[in-house]
Length: 487
Image (cartoon, rainbow, N blue to C red):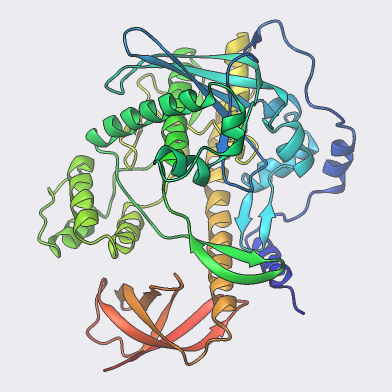
Protein backbone atom coordinates (compact mmCIF):
# COMPACT_ATOMS: atom_id res chain seq x y z
CA UNK A 1 0.00 0.00 0.00
CA UNK A 2 1.30 3.47 -0.90
CA UNK A 3 2.10 5.84 1.93
CA UNK A 4 0.33 9.17 1.48
CA UNK A 5 2.48 10.68 4.22
CA UNK A 6 5.70 9.69 2.42
CA UNK A 7 4.39 10.96 -0.92
CA UNK A 8 3.54 14.32 0.62
CA UNK A 9 6.88 14.53 2.42
CA UNK A 10 8.70 13.94 -0.88
CA UNK A 11 6.65 16.67 -2.55
CA UNK A 12 7.48 18.97 0.38
CA UNK A 13 11.20 18.29 0.03
CA UNK A 14 11.11 19.12 -3.67
CA UNK A 15 9.07 22.27 -3.02
CA UNK A 16 11.55 23.41 -0.35
CA UNK A 17 14.53 22.92 -2.66
CA UNK A 18 12.74 24.87 -5.42
CA UNK A 19 12.33 27.75 -2.94
CA UNK A 20 15.94 27.65 -1.80
CA UNK A 21 15.14 26.11 1.60
CA UNK A 22 17.26 23.32 3.11
CA UNK A 23 15.25 20.21 4.05
CA UNK A 24 18.29 18.57 5.70
CA UNK A 25 20.97 19.61 8.18
CA UNK A 26 24.59 19.76 7.07
CA UNK A 27 27.21 17.24 8.22
CA UNK A 28 28.84 20.05 10.23
CA UNK A 29 25.56 20.84 12.01
CA UNK A 30 24.99 17.17 12.84
CA UNK A 31 28.55 16.87 14.17
CA UNK A 32 27.91 19.87 16.41
CA UNK A 33 24.65 18.34 17.55
CA UNK A 34 26.39 15.08 18.53
CA UNK A 35 28.53 17.04 20.98
CA UNK A 36 25.45 18.46 22.78
CA UNK A 37 24.51 15.91 25.41
CA UNK A 38 22.45 17.80 28.00
CA UNK A 39 20.29 20.88 28.42
CA UNK A 40 22.01 24.01 29.73
CA UNK A 41 22.75 23.48 33.43
CA UNK A 42 25.31 26.08 34.55
CA UNK A 43 22.99 28.65 36.11
CA UNK A 44 24.12 32.27 35.86
CA UNK A 45 24.26 34.58 38.87
CA UNK A 46 21.60 36.87 37.39
CA UNK A 47 19.01 34.06 37.10
CA UNK A 48 16.01 34.02 39.44
CA UNK A 49 14.77 30.65 40.63
CA UNK A 50 11.09 30.59 39.65
CA UNK A 51 10.73 26.80 39.60
CA UNK A 52 8.17 27.01 42.42
CA UNK A 53 5.60 28.89 40.33
CA UNK A 54 2.80 26.90 38.66
CA UNK A 55 4.12 27.17 35.11
CA UNK A 56 2.32 25.23 32.35
CA UNK A 57 2.43 25.06 28.56
CA UNK A 58 -0.55 25.08 26.19
CA UNK A 59 0.12 24.12 22.57
CA UNK A 60 -1.12 21.82 19.81
CA UNK A 61 -1.81 18.22 20.86
CA UNK A 62 1.25 16.92 18.99
CA UNK A 63 3.68 19.80 19.69
CA UNK A 64 6.91 18.98 21.47
CA UNK A 65 8.89 22.12 20.53
CA UNK A 66 7.56 24.06 23.51
CA UNK A 67 8.70 27.68 23.45
CA UNK A 68 6.61 29.28 26.21
CA UNK A 69 5.17 28.75 29.66
CA UNK A 70 2.76 31.11 31.44
CA UNK A 71 1.73 31.87 35.00
CA UNK A 72 -0.37 34.59 36.72
CA UNK A 73 -0.22 36.31 40.13
CA UNK A 74 -3.32 38.31 41.25
CA UNK A 75 -3.12 41.54 43.28
CA UNK A 76 -5.51 43.23 45.71
CA UNK A 77 -6.22 46.11 43.29
CA UNK A 78 -7.50 43.57 40.72
CA UNK A 79 -4.44 43.97 38.55
CA UNK A 80 -2.62 40.74 37.64
CA UNK A 81 1.05 40.03 36.98
CA UNK A 82 1.46 37.81 33.93
CA UNK A 83 4.77 36.04 33.46
CA UNK A 84 5.72 34.50 30.12
CA UNK A 85 8.79 32.23 30.13
CA UNK A 86 10.52 31.82 26.76
CA UNK A 87 12.94 28.96 26.10
CA UNK A 88 16.60 30.07 26.20
CA UNK A 89 17.62 28.53 22.88
CA UNK A 90 20.70 30.73 22.51
CA UNK A 91 22.35 28.92 25.42
CA UNK A 92 22.91 25.85 23.21
CA UNK A 93 22.70 27.32 19.69
CA UNK A 94 25.79 29.50 19.49
CA UNK A 95 25.86 32.45 17.11
CA UNK A 96 27.84 31.66 13.92
CA UNK A 97 27.85 27.90 14.66
CA UNK A 98 26.84 25.37 11.99
CA UNK A 99 23.48 24.87 13.72
CA UNK A 100 22.98 28.63 13.74
CA UNK A 101 23.91 28.79 10.04
CA UNK A 102 21.12 26.33 9.13
CA UNK A 103 18.61 28.27 11.25
CA UNK A 104 19.76 31.54 9.68
CA UNK A 105 19.37 30.09 6.16
CA UNK A 106 15.81 28.73 6.53
CA UNK A 107 14.77 31.21 9.30
CA UNK A 108 11.74 29.11 10.27
CA UNK A 109 10.42 25.61 10.82
CA UNK A 110 8.33 24.52 7.84
CA UNK A 111 5.05 22.80 8.77
CA UNK A 112 3.62 20.76 5.89
CA UNK A 113 0.99 18.08 5.37
CA UNK A 114 3.88 15.68 4.76
CA UNK A 115 5.57 16.45 8.06
CA UNK A 116 7.56 19.15 9.81
CA UNK A 117 11.01 20.33 8.75
CA UNK A 118 12.39 21.89 11.94
CA UNK A 119 14.60 24.98 12.00
CA UNK A 120 16.67 23.25 14.67
CA UNK A 121 17.24 19.49 15.05
CA UNK A 122 14.56 17.79 17.13
CA UNK A 123 17.14 16.73 19.72
CA UNK A 124 17.25 20.43 20.57
CA UNK A 125 13.87 21.89 19.64
CA UNK A 126 11.72 19.10 21.11
CA UNK A 127 14.03 18.18 24.00
CA UNK A 128 17.12 20.06 25.18
CA UNK A 129 15.90 23.59 24.30
CA UNK A 130 12.19 22.82 24.75
CA UNK A 131 10.34 23.74 27.95
CA UNK A 132 9.18 20.14 28.33
CA UNK A 133 6.92 18.87 31.09
CA UNK A 134 8.78 17.96 34.27
CA UNK A 135 11.98 19.71 33.14
CA UNK A 136 13.89 22.57 34.76
CA UNK A 137 15.06 24.89 32.00
CA UNK A 138 16.73 28.25 31.43
CA UNK A 139 14.31 30.93 30.23
CA UNK A 140 13.92 34.60 29.43
CA UNK A 141 10.92 35.81 31.44
CA UNK A 142 8.68 38.70 30.38
CA UNK A 143 6.86 40.10 33.42
CA UNK A 144 3.82 42.33 32.82
CA UNK A 145 1.35 43.95 35.21
CA UNK A 146 -2.09 44.06 33.56
CA UNK A 147 -4.81 46.39 34.85
CA UNK A 148 -8.47 45.42 35.14
CA UNK A 149 -9.21 47.23 31.85
CA UNK A 150 -6.49 45.32 29.97
CA UNK A 151 -3.90 48.11 30.00
CA UNK A 152 -0.29 47.06 30.56
CA UNK A 153 0.81 49.10 33.59
CA UNK A 154 4.46 48.03 33.56
CA UNK A 155 6.76 45.38 32.14
CA UNK A 156 10.31 44.09 32.48
CA UNK A 157 12.51 41.19 31.37
CA UNK A 158 14.95 38.95 33.25
CA UNK A 159 16.56 35.51 33.16
CA UNK A 160 15.20 32.66 35.28
CA UNK A 161 15.03 28.94 35.97
CA UNK A 162 11.53 27.56 35.31
CA UNK A 163 9.74 24.22 35.63
CA UNK A 164 6.84 23.07 33.40
CA UNK A 165 4.31 21.34 35.67
CA UNK A 166 1.83 20.40 32.93
CA UNK A 167 1.95 20.04 29.14
CA UNK A 168 -1.58 20.96 28.07
CA UNK A 169 -3.31 21.07 24.67
CA UNK A 170 -5.44 23.83 23.15
CA UNK A 171 -8.58 21.87 22.34
CA UNK A 172 -9.03 20.10 25.67
CA UNK A 173 -8.25 23.25 27.71
CA UNK A 174 -10.64 25.30 25.55
CA UNK A 175 -13.46 22.75 25.99
CA UNK A 176 -12.90 22.85 29.77
CA UNK A 177 -12.82 26.68 29.89
CA UNK A 178 -16.09 26.75 27.92
CA UNK A 179 -17.73 24.25 30.31
CA UNK A 180 -18.12 21.70 27.53
CA UNK A 181 -15.81 19.02 28.97
CA UNK A 182 -14.16 18.04 32.27
CA UNK A 183 -10.68 19.28 33.10
CA UNK A 184 -7.88 17.51 31.20
CA UNK A 185 -6.11 14.84 33.25
CA UNK A 186 -2.82 16.76 33.45
CA UNK A 187 -4.66 19.88 34.63
CA UNK A 188 -6.46 18.00 37.41
CA UNK A 189 -3.21 16.39 38.53
CA UNK A 190 -1.59 19.71 39.53
CA UNK A 191 -3.19 21.33 42.59
CA UNK A 192 -4.19 24.94 41.98
CA UNK A 193 -3.60 24.87 38.22
CA UNK A 194 -7.32 25.09 37.42
CA UNK A 195 -7.65 28.44 39.23
CA UNK A 196 -4.41 29.56 37.57
CA UNK A 197 -5.73 28.97 34.06
CA UNK A 198 -9.11 30.56 34.76
CA UNK A 199 -7.31 33.69 35.96
CA UNK A 200 -5.05 33.66 32.89
CA UNK A 201 -8.12 33.30 30.66
CA UNK A 202 -9.77 36.33 32.28
CA UNK A 203 -6.66 38.48 31.77
CA UNK A 204 -6.22 37.32 28.17
CA UNK A 205 -9.82 38.30 27.38
CA UNK A 206 -9.16 41.76 28.88
CA UNK A 207 -6.07 42.18 26.69
CA UNK A 208 -7.98 41.02 23.63
CA UNK A 209 -10.94 43.36 24.27
CA UNK A 210 -8.63 46.34 24.68
CA UNK A 211 -6.73 45.57 21.45
CA UNK A 212 -9.96 45.28 19.47
CA UNK A 213 -11.24 48.55 20.94
CA UNK A 214 -8.07 50.09 19.53
CA UNK A 215 -8.69 48.61 16.06
CA UNK A 216 -7.09 45.15 16.04
CA UNK A 217 -8.67 43.17 13.21
CA UNK A 218 -10.95 40.14 13.70
CA UNK A 219 -9.81 37.99 10.78
CA UNK A 220 -10.64 34.31 10.38
CA UNK A 221 -9.24 32.30 7.48
CA UNK A 222 -9.53 28.59 6.71
CA UNK A 223 -6.33 26.51 6.76
CA UNK A 224 -7.21 22.81 6.87
CA UNK A 225 -4.83 20.36 8.56
CA UNK A 226 -4.23 16.92 7.12
CA UNK A 227 -5.63 14.02 9.17
CA UNK A 228 -3.95 10.62 8.85
CA UNK A 229 -4.88 7.09 9.85
CA UNK A 230 -1.43 5.57 10.03
CA UNK A 231 0.18 6.53 6.71
CA UNK A 232 -3.11 7.11 4.87
CA UNK A 233 -4.59 10.60 4.44
CA UNK A 234 -8.22 10.36 5.53
CA UNK A 235 -9.50 13.91 5.95
CA UNK A 236 -8.76 17.64 6.07
CA UNK A 237 -9.91 19.33 9.25
CA UNK A 238 -10.22 23.06 9.84
CA UNK A 239 -8.61 24.19 13.07
CA UNK A 240 -11.05 26.46 14.90
CA UNK A 241 -10.08 29.40 17.07
CA UNK A 242 -10.82 28.81 20.74
CA UNK A 243 -10.31 30.36 24.19
CA UNK A 244 -7.07 28.48 24.90
CA UNK A 245 -5.49 29.58 21.61
CA UNK A 246 -6.62 33.14 22.28
CA UNK A 247 -5.12 32.98 25.79
CA UNK A 248 -1.67 32.15 24.41
CA UNK A 249 -2.01 34.47 21.41
CA UNK A 250 -2.94 37.47 23.54
CA UNK A 251 -0.15 36.87 26.06
CA UNK A 252 2.40 36.47 23.24
CA UNK A 253 1.30 39.72 21.57
CA UNK A 254 1.68 41.53 24.91
CA UNK A 255 5.06 39.86 25.57
CA UNK A 256 6.32 40.84 22.12
CA UNK A 257 5.31 44.46 22.74
CA UNK A 258 6.98 44.41 26.15
CA UNK A 259 10.16 43.01 24.61
CA UNK A 260 10.26 45.72 21.94
CA UNK A 261 9.74 48.34 24.65
CA UNK A 262 12.51 46.86 26.80
CA UNK A 263 15.06 46.83 23.98
CA UNK A 264 14.07 50.35 22.99
CA UNK A 265 14.59 51.51 26.58
CA UNK A 266 18.05 49.96 26.62
CA UNK A 267 19.02 51.72 23.39
CA UNK A 268 19.34 48.42 21.55
CA UNK A 269 18.62 48.13 17.82
CA UNK A 270 15.99 45.50 17.14
CA UNK A 271 13.75 43.81 14.64
CA UNK A 272 10.22 45.05 14.35
CA UNK A 273 7.45 42.89 13.00
CA UNK A 274 5.24 45.29 11.06
CA UNK A 275 2.21 45.29 8.82
CA UNK A 276 2.19 48.53 6.89
CA UNK A 277 -0.93 50.62 6.41
CA UNK A 278 -2.57 49.07 3.34
CA UNK A 279 -1.62 50.59 -0.03
CA UNK A 280 -4.69 48.92 -1.55
CA UNK A 281 -7.08 50.53 0.94
CA UNK A 282 -9.30 51.85 -1.86
CA UNK A 283 -9.94 48.27 -2.99
CA UNK A 284 -10.89 47.36 0.61
CA UNK A 285 -13.33 50.31 0.54
CA UNK A 286 -14.85 48.87 -2.65
CA UNK A 287 -15.17 45.40 -1.09
CA UNK A 288 -17.02 46.85 1.92
CA UNK A 289 -19.29 48.88 -0.37
CA UNK A 290 -20.55 45.65 -1.96
CA UNK A 291 -22.13 44.86 1.42
CA UNK A 292 -23.53 48.36 1.79
CA UNK A 293 -20.85 49.41 4.26
CA UNK A 294 -18.99 52.74 4.03
CA UNK A 295 -15.32 52.91 4.99
CA UNK A 296 -13.37 56.19 5.16
CA UNK A 297 -11.10 57.17 2.26
CA UNK A 298 -7.93 56.87 4.37
CA UNK A 299 -6.80 53.61 6.10
CA UNK A 300 -8.66 53.21 9.41
CA UNK A 301 -8.19 49.98 11.37
CA UNK A 302 -11.08 50.75 13.74
CA UNK A 303 -13.55 51.25 10.89
CA UNK A 304 -12.35 48.08 9.16
CA UNK A 305 -12.72 46.11 12.41
CA UNK A 306 -16.29 47.35 12.83
CA UNK A 307 -17.09 46.18 9.27
CA UNK A 308 -15.54 42.76 9.92
CA UNK A 309 -17.49 42.24 13.15
CA UNK A 310 -20.74 43.14 11.36
CA UNK A 311 -20.05 40.73 8.49
CA UNK A 312 -19.09 37.85 10.79
CA UNK A 313 -22.40 38.19 12.64
CA UNK A 314 -24.40 38.54 9.40
CA UNK A 315 -22.80 35.70 7.41
CA UNK A 316 -20.48 33.36 9.37
CA UNK A 317 -20.36 30.84 6.47
CA UNK A 318 -18.79 33.28 4.01
CA UNK A 319 -16.80 35.27 6.58
CA UNK A 320 -13.53 33.26 6.20
CA UNK A 321 -13.53 34.02 2.48
CA UNK A 322 -14.10 37.73 3.10
CA UNK A 323 -11.30 37.58 5.67
CA UNK A 324 -8.95 36.01 3.15
CA UNK A 325 -9.75 38.72 0.59
CA UNK A 326 -9.02 41.43 3.19
CA UNK A 327 -5.79 39.69 4.27
CA UNK A 328 -4.57 39.67 0.66
CA UNK A 329 -5.44 43.34 0.19
CA UNK A 330 -3.77 44.42 3.44
CA UNK A 331 -0.55 42.73 2.38
CA UNK A 332 2.15 40.75 4.13
CA UNK A 333 3.86 41.32 7.43
CA UNK A 334 7.58 41.96 7.29
CA UNK A 335 10.64 42.39 9.48
CA UNK A 336 12.44 45.74 9.58
CA UNK A 337 15.38 47.09 11.54
CA UNK A 338 14.19 49.73 13.99
CA UNK A 339 16.48 52.16 15.76
CA UNK A 340 13.83 54.80 16.48
CA UNK A 341 13.11 56.21 19.91
CA UNK A 342 9.32 56.05 19.77
CA UNK A 343 8.80 52.40 18.91
CA UNK A 344 7.46 53.06 15.42
CA UNK A 345 6.54 51.78 12.86
CA UNK A 346 3.32 50.04 13.78
CA UNK A 347 1.47 46.80 13.05
CA UNK A 348 -1.79 47.68 11.27
CA UNK A 349 -3.50 44.33 11.82
CA UNK A 350 -2.79 44.16 15.57
CA UNK A 351 -3.25 47.90 16.19
CA UNK A 352 -0.01 47.98 18.17
CA UNK A 353 3.09 50.13 17.93
CA UNK A 354 6.53 48.74 18.64
CA UNK A 355 6.06 45.00 18.08
CA UNK A 356 8.69 42.31 17.62
CA UNK A 357 8.86 38.51 17.44
CA UNK A 358 10.46 36.96 20.51
CA UNK A 359 8.31 34.13 21.84
CA UNK A 360 9.18 31.19 19.54
CA UNK A 361 13.00 30.86 19.32
CA UNK A 362 12.86 27.10 18.66
CA UNK A 363 10.78 27.72 15.53
CA UNK A 364 11.68 31.20 14.18
CA UNK A 365 15.11 32.74 13.65
CA UNK A 366 13.97 36.36 14.22
CA UNK A 367 13.00 35.30 17.76
CA UNK A 368 16.47 33.82 18.32
CA UNK A 369 18.06 37.08 17.10
CA UNK A 370 15.81 39.02 19.48
CA UNK A 371 16.77 36.69 22.33
CA UNK A 372 20.46 37.43 21.77
CA UNK A 373 19.72 41.17 21.81
CA UNK A 374 17.77 40.76 25.06
CA UNK A 375 20.58 38.84 26.74
CA UNK A 376 23.12 41.47 25.68
CA UNK A 377 20.85 44.22 27.05
CA UNK A 378 20.37 42.36 30.34
CA UNK A 379 24.14 41.90 30.71
CA UNK A 380 24.97 45.46 29.67
CA UNK A 381 27.03 43.99 26.82
CA UNK A 382 27.47 45.36 23.28
CA UNK A 383 24.90 44.33 20.67
CA UNK A 384 25.80 40.93 19.14
CA UNK A 385 24.65 42.13 15.70
CA UNK A 386 25.83 45.17 13.76
CA UNK A 387 23.02 47.41 12.41
CA UNK A 388 23.87 46.57 8.78
CA UNK A 389 23.79 42.86 9.69
CA UNK A 390 20.33 43.27 11.26
CA UNK A 391 19.10 45.21 8.22
CA UNK A 392 20.18 42.36 5.94
CA UNK A 393 18.68 39.71 8.24
CA UNK A 394 15.34 41.57 8.41
CA UNK A 395 15.00 41.36 4.62
CA UNK A 396 16.29 37.79 4.51
CA UNK A 397 13.88 36.57 7.23
CA UNK A 398 10.94 38.22 5.44
CA UNK A 399 11.92 36.55 2.16
CA UNK A 400 12.43 33.06 3.63
CA UNK A 401 9.23 33.26 5.66
CA UNK A 402 7.44 33.96 2.38
CA UNK A 403 9.19 30.96 0.78
CA UNK A 404 8.17 28.71 3.70
CA UNK A 405 4.55 29.88 3.53
CA UNK A 406 4.45 29.13 -0.20
CA UNK A 407 5.74 25.61 0.47
CA UNK A 408 3.12 25.09 3.20
CA UNK A 409 0.36 26.41 0.92
CA UNK A 410 1.55 24.16 -1.93
CA UNK A 411 1.40 21.13 0.37
CA UNK A 412 -2.09 22.00 1.58
CA UNK A 413 -3.14 21.98 -2.08
CA UNK A 414 -1.32 18.69 -2.74
CA UNK A 415 -3.00 17.09 0.28
CA UNK A 416 -6.37 18.32 -0.95
CA UNK A 417 -5.72 16.91 -4.43
CA UNK A 418 -4.65 13.60 -2.91
CA UNK A 419 -7.80 13.43 -0.79
CA UNK A 420 -10.02 14.08 -3.82
CA UNK A 421 -8.20 12.07 -6.51
CA UNK A 422 -10.55 9.09 -6.06
CA UNK A 423 -13.68 11.30 -6.27
CA UNK A 424 -13.55 12.41 -9.92
CA UNK A 425 -17.06 13.14 -11.30
CA UNK A 426 -18.54 13.66 -7.84
CA UNK A 427 -20.56 16.82 -7.22
CA UNK A 428 -20.14 19.24 -4.33
CA UNK A 429 -21.71 22.40 -2.92
CA UNK A 430 -19.23 25.28 -3.02
CA UNK A 431 -18.71 29.02 -2.53
CA UNK A 432 -16.88 31.31 -4.96
CA UNK A 433 -13.72 32.60 -3.23
CA UNK A 434 -12.06 34.45 -6.11
CA UNK A 435 -13.23 35.91 -9.42
CA UNK A 436 -10.93 37.92 -11.68
CA UNK A 437 -9.32 37.95 -15.11
CA UNK A 438 -6.85 35.38 -13.79
CA UNK A 439 -9.55 32.84 -13.03
CA UNK A 440 -12.43 31.85 -10.76
CA UNK A 441 -11.88 29.84 -7.58
CA UNK A 442 -14.31 27.93 -5.41
CA UNK A 443 -14.16 26.39 -1.93
CA UNK A 444 -16.09 23.20 -1.22
CA UNK A 445 -18.21 23.26 1.92
CA UNK A 446 -17.08 19.70 2.70
CA UNK A 447 -14.27 18.80 2.58
CA UNK A 448 -12.80 22.35 2.95
CA UNK A 449 -10.89 22.27 -0.34
CA UNK A 450 -10.29 25.07 -2.85
CA UNK A 451 -9.89 24.61 -6.59
CA UNK A 452 -10.24 26.32 -9.95
CA UNK A 453 -13.54 26.57 -11.82
CA UNK A 454 -12.59 25.93 -15.45
CA UNK A 455 -16.03 26.27 -17.08
CA UNK A 456 -19.28 27.98 -16.12
CA UNK A 457 -17.65 30.91 -14.36
CA UNK A 458 -19.46 33.65 -16.29
CA UNK A 459 -21.47 35.97 -14.04
CA UNK A 460 -20.11 34.61 -10.78
CA UNK A 461 -18.69 36.78 -8.00
CA UNK A 462 -17.04 36.18 -4.64
CA UNK A 463 -19.53 34.78 -2.12
CA UNK A 464 -21.88 33.14 -4.65
CA UNK A 465 -23.02 29.61 -3.86
CA UNK A 466 -22.61 27.09 -6.69
CA UNK A 467 -22.66 23.36 -7.33
CA UNK A 468 -19.55 21.97 -9.00
CA UNK A 469 -18.25 18.70 -10.39
CA UNK A 470 -14.67 17.54 -9.89
CA UNK A 471 -12.98 16.79 -13.23
CA UNK A 472 -9.25 16.45 -12.47
CA UNK A 473 -6.53 16.57 -9.82
CA UNK A 474 -2.74 16.88 -9.95
CA UNK A 475 -1.22 15.91 -6.61
CA UNK A 476 2.36 16.95 -7.42
CA UNK A 477 1.37 20.49 -8.39
CA UNK A 478 -1.63 20.75 -6.09
CA UNK A 479 -4.10 21.46 -8.91
CA UNK A 480 -7.84 20.76 -8.52
CA UNK A 481 -10.23 21.58 -11.37
CA UNK A 482 -14.04 21.83 -11.27
CA UNK A 483 -16.82 22.59 -13.70
CA UNK A 484 -20.06 24.29 -12.75
CA UNK A 485 -23.24 22.20 -12.89
CA UNK A 486 -26.92 23.08 -12.80
CA UNK A 487 -26.67 25.98 -15.26
